[in-house]
Length: 264
Image (cartoon, rainbow, N blue to C red; front, side, top):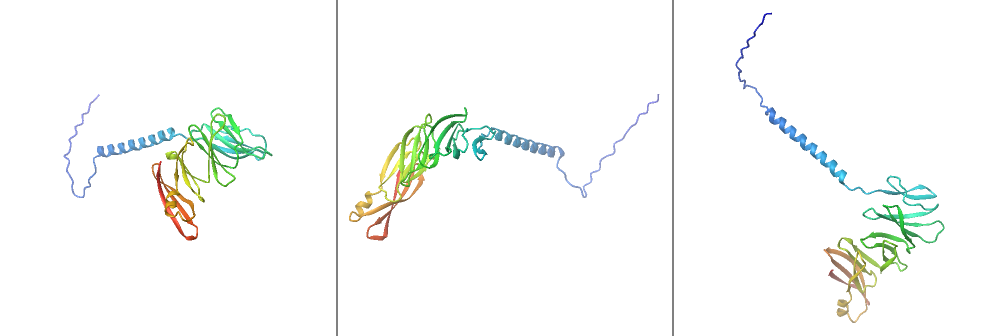
């Protein structure tokens, strides 16, 4: 066998600068692209992680045949088991998704009922006849607050326990200003106002009552004044501005206005 050896001679490289273009180093460009891809991958991974960890609230709906409406969850689990022709007016779910209050009326019944469900066990906790039309439900640590209208045109807050829906306390008033963030409930009258009452929102405990008559009586003790709370505004943490309008007999065109700043 004959072995052939090939010898190559390298030709010297001649730099050509005329008309040449500068390119970034390939290794550095590659590292930049790789870093961008890693950042994009981490961003997508974090987005999926946050979406998976985010607490999703279950959804409920009223469904079924027209003569047999029931409440179901998003997995089609049936919550209520009412008889035919039951009217489900509304339902309310607690913020922790553990309880549901249903406002409903049985067929041919003159009164509405409220029924409290334990959503974890699917069982009925309690049921009662609450009173007039339901205005809404608030959930606190110790009480279910059921609000409804009174015959005098005002509003009533019923504080019920979670065990039997027993009425523990009630607050009546023509008008209310609710501030659950700072746990304050303010009761006042728009027509004839003598005072503005402040309560602890979560428990219904009265904090204090502020008179809106003294200043007017001192300044106008010779005339009859009708006072009206025209507005309640939150101006700070547990701090409120109460605007009062007064109508003086014989001086219908000369309304008096006063502003009270109350800190609770």
